[in-house]
Amino acid sequence: MKEYLAQTDYIILSSNRLYTPLQKLTNCDVLPSGRCYPQTAMYYRALFQGLLGFKKVAEFTSFPTIPLLNIPIDDQGADESFTVYDHPKVMIFQKQ
Image (cartoon, rainbow, N blue to C red; front, top):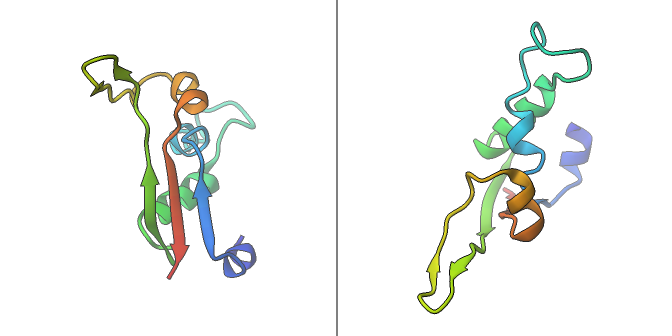
């Protein structure tokens, strides 16, 4: 992974489909075999904390709105299948 990151200028996360659930699946003592991802969780935590040499330079969101009133509805807490396919949050990280 370090070799790939050394060759990378940008990391683009086009949805939370992986980073949200995988950060919760780290306790290998209680999870079924093949359902534990501690290294992946560490990668995402390190990326978000700026420990991999990348800084978040952009974030894009598009929330559903109430017609006529143009009031946005923050639904990031909704089931991922609703937000991932319809209006995902996109983050761009640039190597520093």
